[in-house]
Length: 333
Ligand code: 6V0
Image 1 (tube, rainbow, N blue to C red):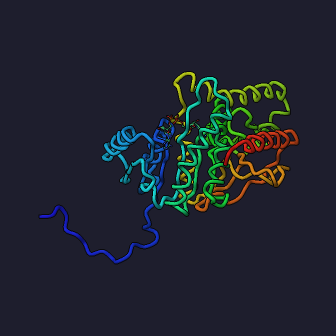
Image 2: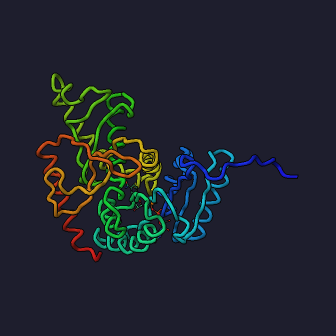
Image 3: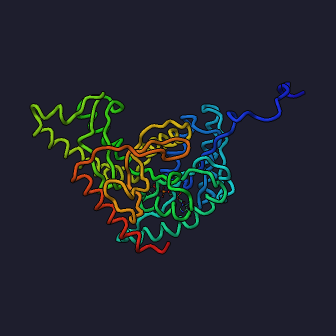
């Protein structure tokens, strides 16, 4: 006796029934936070995990599979072999070497370049139509490296960039203004991390511009507060790492949010790392990835928002572009 009596099926599944697949490379703190957020938010039919450590990988896969009774049905696969990622819609790269105390940024980058040479070509081979979403740090240079190694068009290679910085920025502004962070529109752009640029002029809450509203009475006091918030955004990653050793939950939500916009063709705006040459006076020969607010959909980057930058903000963006460009010249790509 069978458990269920089968019903006759029509021959081919309709196009809307196509299964979706997300692969996460690197099953560390960040990769697993992303994987578990993707699962709880029911973003994909199939989730593949890849890591260089087979036991850790198998353990993480089983641990997630054991939650099946509480989650939407998702097929979870794991293997150190990239064949497991075949036909992915999105490949999220979180694998990264850890900085050795005293190691230079360039040396860490060289080690991550060697790692990306192992990771990106097989991903591109097994999923030639995939979107690549890079999270590993330094994210802007590694997104450039992933672009070069994949041979993909730039709209399909995206760095998580300042999406997380912007979320921290919105949280701190919301906390200060006692409003909901989801009602705060505020972007950090440029380089992810220390040199990110806060866009003051475009900040608003529920459609009310924050700065022009403040200029009437307590502008001087508030400017100081805003500068403190910008500094706090930059320092917040260091603070979390000092306190718990790594960051994971916020980057997990932030990347799942990007995956949703891409996979579900949301056309929503996110500040992500993209090929920035030609924008805001960055010369065409500077092939660098920096974050700008971009519209994301099923084919990747659809467009870049034409936001207003002050002269100083644009100059800071160009400075970052030069620094990254000079760093990239030292790489053996
Ligand atoms: P982690 O916990 O050390 O995990 C890294 C994982 O990568 C480990 O499980 C390794 O086994 C694995 N790995 C190493 N080499 C390979 C390889 N060749 N193939 C497959 N897997 C490999 O680090 P954690 O998860 O904390 O951080 C991962 C990366 O994300 C780091 O580069 C962080 O700096 C970066 N982050 C980026 C953020 C952003 O906003 N862009 C935010 C947080 C962290």
